[in-house]
Length: 157
Image (cartoon, rainbow, N blue to C red; front, side, top):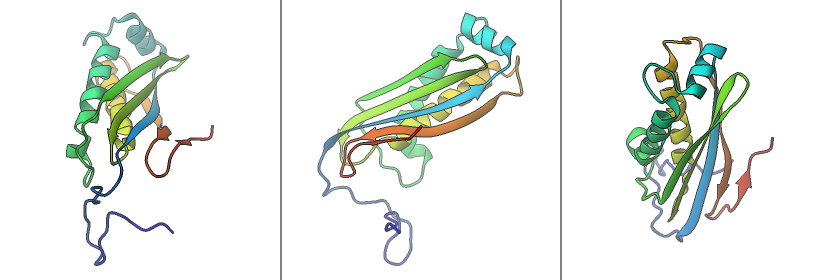
């Protein structure tokens, strides 16, 4: 089993010291899905949700969330992100959210990509809940990461 890096020799939580690690370009991509009924899907697609442009708000929320990840998840390092993107694909009964985060630094950006995806999905729910309270958020996962000591990793389908 791998060493638990967030615990010290006495088993107490600690923030990992990344000071000795080399700076490399790091990228992470995450995705998730929100299943919605046809009325909500049409309103999201057409921009007719009463609260406003759902995808524009979700994109901004996701980007803002990535920048605040260290404030939300204990022991995450505050990072100087160089890029965050949040994209959407309308499916037959869902909206797929894909977010990426990038930087040149000493630690990865997986949590930032996952946080961006999560908050974008929650924003879609919040904005469309008047139309469909039964939306289901699912399939949140890391798709790919590049950079750092462990190199390139991609999820199997």
